[in-house]
Length: 516
Image (tube, rainbow, N blue to C red):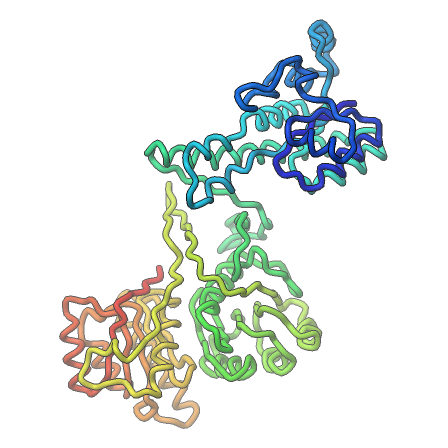
C-alpha cells in the first residue's frame, strides 16, 4: 500500500505518516513535506523517483504527471485499467494526504502583492485531491488533520479504511477544493475589475419542524465564521429545540443586549422589545423589565448580559417564558430553571466585538446585503437643538432610549424613565400612530402603579425624524420631559418650534436607525 503526502498545514503529519509506516505502508512525499518526514527519521520516497521527472518551474510542476494521477484514478475493478497501468509502469496510490497553500492567509496580509498571491495558488494539490476523491471507491483522500486518527484506527482494524469513510472523505475533499476556488475566484475577479460575485458558505445546523407557519419547511444554517452574540454557537442547556420564530426573536434580543455594558435585561415578542431595563444587577434589571409590560412578556424571550443567578432565576421561574439567554447560569439557578422542562435555556458567547459584518436578507429572486447596524452614538448635551436644555440627570435615559429604539420596528417610538421602558410603539404606518401606542402604554403602566403620567417626566426617543410637529404636541400632552431623534426633516424647524413652545429639550443625533 502506498500513500502520497504533500501538505502545507503540517499539524500531526509526522505522527500520521509514522503510524502508516508502522503498518507497512510506503510513503511518497514532495519537497518540504519530505524533508520534515525524513528529519523525523522516516524513510520516504521522493516524488521525482516515482515520476522519473524532476520538479521544475520553482516547484510549480511536480505532481502533475500520469504516474501520479494514473496511480490515483486507475480503477482496481477494471482489467483494462490494471493492464494500462502495468504497461506504463504505474503503481497504484492508495491514500493521498494533501492540504493546500495558504491562499486565504496570504491575501489577508495588508501588504500582499498580486505576484505573491498568485504564487500561493495551489495547482497540484487540488488536482490530486480531486483525482483521489473521484476514485473514492479505492482511494482514501485526507485533507484535514482532524481525520488522521480515524483513518489510522480503521486501517489498524480492517487493513484499510471503510468504503463509508472513503465516501465521506471524498465529499470533504471536494468541499475543500470548492472553498479554495471560491477564495481565488473572488480575489482574481476583484483584481481584474470584473463584476462582483457573492459566494456564501453555511453549514446546516439543524432542520426545523417548520418555518413561520406549520405549512412552511425550514432549516437553520450556521456561518463558517464563529461570531459572538450568535445562536449558531449557543449552547442549549434545557428545553425543546428552537423553532424558526424562536431563532428570529432570540437573534433580535441578542442584538439589543450587545448595546449595553451595564447590567441589562430585555423581554422580547415578535422581534420587538416589550420591556427592557438597566439595573444594579441582573435581578434588578429583570424586575424592571417585567414591570415594564407584565402582559406582553407572557410567552416571550428574555436575554441578559449577566450570569443568571439564583435570585434572578427565582424571579423568572413563575413567568411563562419560551427562552432565557445569558452568558452563563449559576449551578443553582440552572437546577431551578431546569424544573421547567420546556423552558429553553441558552448559554451565549457575549464577548465584546464591534467588528462590522454583513447582513443578508432574501427577496424574491435576489439577496439584499448591508452592514449590520452596530454603531450607536452616545447621546450628549451638545446634540440639543432647542432653547430648553436637558437636565444632567436625564442624559442617561436619553441615551438608554436611543439605544433601545433602534431595535424596534420602524416607525418606532420608545418612552423610558429611570433606565426602564414604559411604552413601545412599533411598526406603524405613520409615526404619530407609534407615538400614541407608546405613550398610552406608558400611561397605563404608570397609573397602574398609582402615579400620573403628566408628572412622571418620561423621555421619548424616535428612530426617525419627525415629518410634522404632531409627535411633539402629543408628547407635551403626556408631560414628556425630553426628546431624542435623528433630525433631518425639511420640517425640523416646526418640531423645534413646538418643543420650544412647550419647554421640552430636543436632541438631534444626526443618525437614523430604521429597522424593517
